Amino acid sequence: MEYVIEMLNITKEFPGIKANDNVTLQVNKGEIHALLGENGAGKSTLMSILFGLYQPDKGVIKVNGNEVQIKNPNDANDLGIGMVHQHFKLVHNFTVAENIILGREETEKGLLKLNEAVEKIKNLSEKYQLRIDPNAYISDISVGMQQRVEILKMLFRDSDILIFDEPTAVLTPQEIEELMKIMKELVNEGKSIILITHKLNEIKKVADRCSVLRKGKYIGTVDVKDVSMEQMAEMMVGRKINFTVDKEKANPGKVIFSVKNLNLLSPDLNRFLLKDISFDVKKGEILCVAGIEGNGQSELVKAITGLIPHKSGKFYLNDQDITDKNIRNKTLAGIGHIPEDRHKYGLVLDYNLAENLIIQTYFSDELQSKGFLKFRSIYKHAKDLINRFDIRSGKGPYTKARSMSGGNQQKAIIAREIDREPDLLIAVQPTRGLDVGAIEYIHKELIKHRDSGKAVLLVSLELDEVMNLSDRIIVMYEGEIVADLDPDKTNENELGLYMAGSKRTTVRVKRGEIDE
Image (cartoon, rainbow, N blue to C red; front, side, top):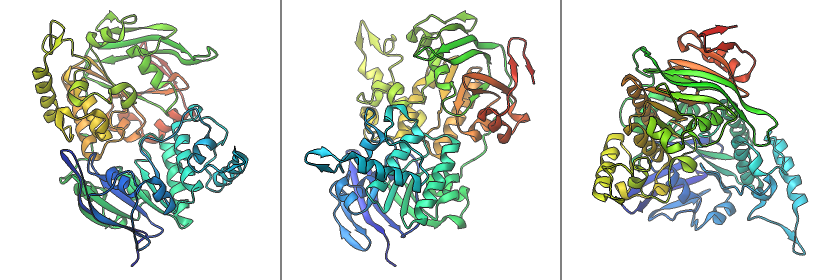
């Protein structure tokens, strides 16, 4: 049988790590072929080789039966191969159309022929129901829309082999459903898709076959319809995975953290992004803030942590007013923060792992003396956290944060924040972009933090995470709290109605009542 893509015995080494170790991948024409593996298993490296971003040390690549050399992404495009990267490659102050034609510009007498390109983009957008304005600026559109721009970039270049690298990591549940439909439509048109993911339920929904990598090695290829999610998870991590979250019933104690009458205006001052928000988080509980992205959750966390100023309202931690404290003093008072954007707020990408692990504590007596850093203590501290939290990197504590996989970057942030044992741990999308093994581990760490008598404020878009991990749920819609729910007395359907704004309760937090 002739495969549309064959990658035979591919090996790729980086300093200190063998990312791909004799890996073979064979993709049929007209199928959605999932590439499954833990964070750092070598999936993105393999696809970067296929797209010409890296050159293999050993191995052969065939496209439609012909052996090819793919020296750069232009070679890949010429062979009909396109790629949507995990972190989108878009110019934010360009329009949608300008981003799509970038590198494929057509000119006449030195002038850009933009109108014809816009027409082609509109036709493709309608054909695949991508619904996007070619003249909108990237900086003004949502993450889900930005992903559609990346898909249109591939279609504009007439790509027949489409690589999606973790395409749902930053999407809402509704956007994920839309993307699945688009992928099926593309395959019906005769295109072939390679889907890099570690979300097993998505593989079951859309993929025909699935190839599994573990620690850089090829484990095997299965027909998705013939295997369970549990079997795929075991292939991926090499052990049985528990899909249910094991936790004792919460035993909440006194209130650790309170938000009172928080209001936040938009930058143009014409509307409230947060309106009269009040809630308490108790010792020994996980309180989850649920909602569709863009309903004020990000602004709530930034206001609490001090990243943005708010119009009015108070924050109390352990009965102390911390409203006007600066970011460092809020941290020292007992707040830990796992931010939603690990690159922008979580890490200094050009620092090494050890340096990133002390960002909150470098000024402590254990790590400095008279203004000079104690490097022996810093690297010992880093090695301890690397072992405790299973952070995988090529050069251990000396690894540049930028070169680590997304999942291991996330583990580094979680290790840094939990190690400080904060009274309130704010965890925003803590498992975004992580594989099932890592998710299981992070959930255990959050529950362990709760059980040690601390409080966790969890912000999540993943409905199953919200239902499984929370002891209490508040739902935000358009900057207001519209429900305060017990996860044992609600379900995903009801939760979805509150999140969509089609159902709401009036929450009287101060008196502890809920009025329908």
